[in-house]
Length: 118
Length: 113
Image (cartoon, rainbow over all chains, first blue to last red; front, side, top):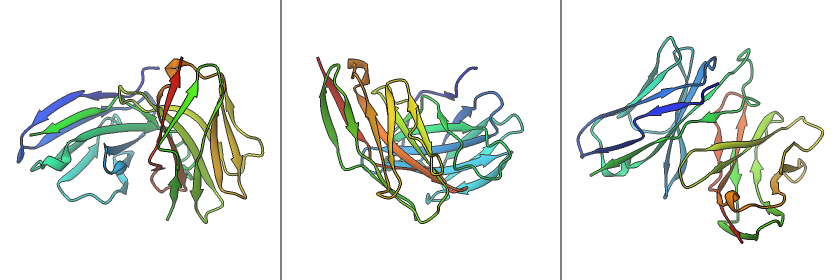
């Protein structure tokens, strides 16, 4: 199976602009999670989608939003970019099985999108 | 709240030797999953090994094994016969129920020839 793909891989934007990042999960995986990784804050959870519904949301401002489509592909959007949004954005997919409990489900990550805000 | 602690910011190991990366966790929930990931300089997070809280035996995957000590709440990663390609950041992570995956701050492993 093909792995998780993320596009674009690199992105340079200026403050105030908006950006949309895309993630295609492993075929058959219905859950997608997004993370932000910075040297100072480490890996921080943004949101998780399962069957087009947001299941979990991290502690990020409303400028960060996401969605999932019926084919499980997901996008995240950041509006009014700030310098501090410069980071590696990682997407992960998993197949939650019955969805009853997901603590045992392994998340498989994509290569990430490296966003630089100037 | 769940928490993962990795106390070793950086470690060095000689090629072909074994190395242990420490991870302690904190949760009051009896059901949880513990994961280790490797992140090379390219940025991609590579899944290495998983241990469930109810698993009786320590998990192993090739050269990777997880030393799971439930009473001490530790889940150390052991890499046997280190290779130069093992040089990377290593993250311990935990998931409890339907809550998000929580990561530690990571350990940078450098393998020396």
